[in-house]
Length: 210
Image (cartoon, rainbow, N blue to C red; front, side, top):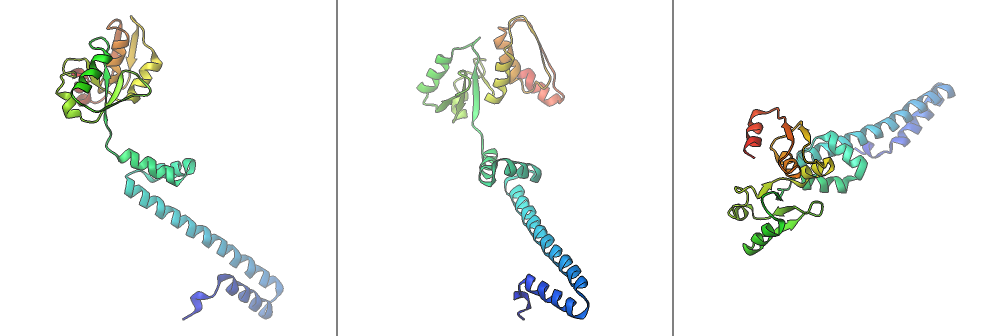
């Protein structure tokens, strides 16, 4: 069987010629228009199926929704989207914040260096740093003493933009687990008031502990 090897447009031309001989030029033109439109639509459908299949595989592989992957690909391309998905699935390093009301940055960094705890200072906020070995860091007692809080830099930046002042009243609408509240209180030097709202009771308890 060699029929599947015949180019589609060769079949189209033959159909047009047969229509012209058996019927009329007008009929041949109609057949030509219908078949050419079909071939164009077929290619679009094949491309759409390939695109959906690719998005499906990406979604399953990296555990991201298809609509989000499609949006990222349209904005940044496939390579950057894959890199972003891989980064999202990687295990994050814990980030800590020095509480200036109870400790000093230099003191905390010195204790980590003396204990040979590897860390990376934040390039955005000078009192944040990433810890590579959290179990060793916990043994320093800085967290239990309140000199250091576990908090991601992403939650510290909004506080920096808010720039809370002493004596102000602040409302935190999504407060748990409490990192922002603690930093706001530090910036206000424990004056004024903070109203912290949290929808989920379990997370609210964690916030109280913090």
